[in-house]
Length: 206
Ligand code: TYD
Image (cartoon, rainbow, N blue to C red; front, side):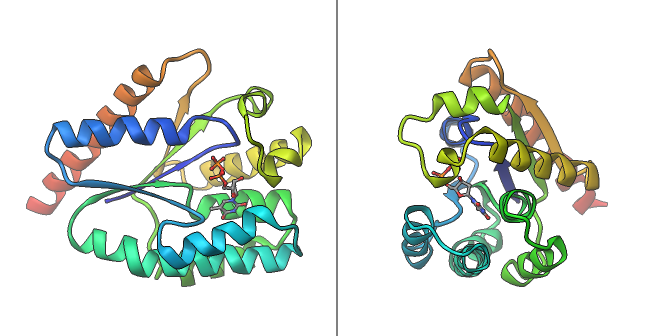
């Protein structure tokens, strides 16, 4: 099962994923964590370029999608085959939000490239960690170029996520993270994932 985690900057995805992995481990459920851009050796190299250099928006889009194609082929597809739970820190919805809504590239082009890079596979579940953009930006200690782009940019990113959520309510779960401890958030998200896994098993048996 492929599960992605999305949100604006500083919403706590990485911490949540770390907590979840420990829980899966404790329950002896096979799970891996990975991230985009990156997650495989070549994709991590592409990540270095994307996050450190300024570039044309279209160039940036292609780099994200190249990294994704490589990551999907080398890491996600094999893990899906091995029936593992994959916790992915950002995925295709980030491209809609950042390159589409914030950079202004055409959504239909991004959707086509997303499909190509992932062999048409979308996550079974996507968590949106909902935190006011001002608070998230204030948490950033070593800001990347998107964090440096400021509040207006992040507001557009947020709009992009809300658009995707409206389009596919069944896949998304919105998790409010303001004033909550990482442990509390991890408990809630873990319970949702376990319930979804059980539903899937039941459906397979029928
Ligand atoms: P990262 O430092 O991992 O940020 P975060 O902790 O917020 O995830 O850097 C990833 C950056 O790349 C993040 O600012 C979002 C951006 N991004 C895109 O613009 N498009 C994409 O398709 C993806 C996957 C990420």
